Figure 1 (cartoon, one colour):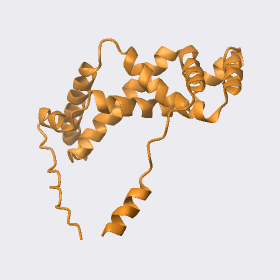
Figure 2 (spheres, helix red, strand yellow; figure 1 turned 180 degrees about the vertical axis):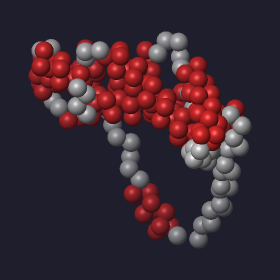
Figure 3 (spheres, one colour; figure 1 turned 45 degrees about the vertical axis):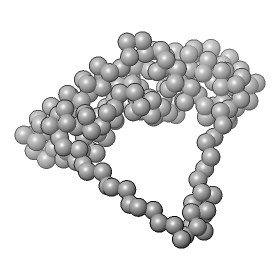
Amino acid sequence: MMTMLASMLLLMEPPRPSPPAEELAAAIALWDKAPSAATQRDEAVTDALDHLTRATLDYGRVPRPASRKDGEAWIAKFDTLMASYRARLPADRRPLDREAIACAATPMAWSLSLDELRQVDRFLATEAGAKFWSLGFGRADALIGCYEFVLREKVVRTDEDLLSVGVKPPERPKPSPVFFD
C-alpha cells in the first residue's frame, strides 16, 4: 500500500513555473495590441459562458432535447443559467481579461524568445500581420479555453445553478476511508 502511495506521488506533476517575466509581458502585449482585441475578448467570453452553461446542464444530467417540447424546456434552463452567469461577470472585466490573456499568452512566452516575440510584434504591425491575427490562427481556441478556466472559478456555482433551474444536482460520492498498512 505504501509503495502504491509513493508511486502515485511520483506521478503527480508539480505545478509548472511561470515563463520568464519579460517573455510573458511581451506575449501579453501581443494580445493587447491585436486588431479587434476587445471584440475577440467579448466573443471568447460569450463562447466560454456557452460551454460552461452546457457543461453545467450536462453535469446535472439534463438530457439534450429529443423533441421540440424537450428543446423548449432545455433552452429555458440554458437561457436562465447563461443570464445568471452573465450577471455574475464583474462590472470591471479588466482583471478577468488580464487573467485570461496571461493564460493564453503563456504558451507563446514559453515557446518564443524575447527577440522572436519582438519579431512577431513587428509582423503584426503590418497589414499582413493584422490580417493573419484577425483570421485567428490557433489563438481563438486558446483564449476561449482560458476564459472557461477563469470564469469557472468566478461565476459558476454548479449545484446552486442547477437548483435555480429546477434540477437536482447529482449526489457526490462519499469519500471512502483510507486504510494504511
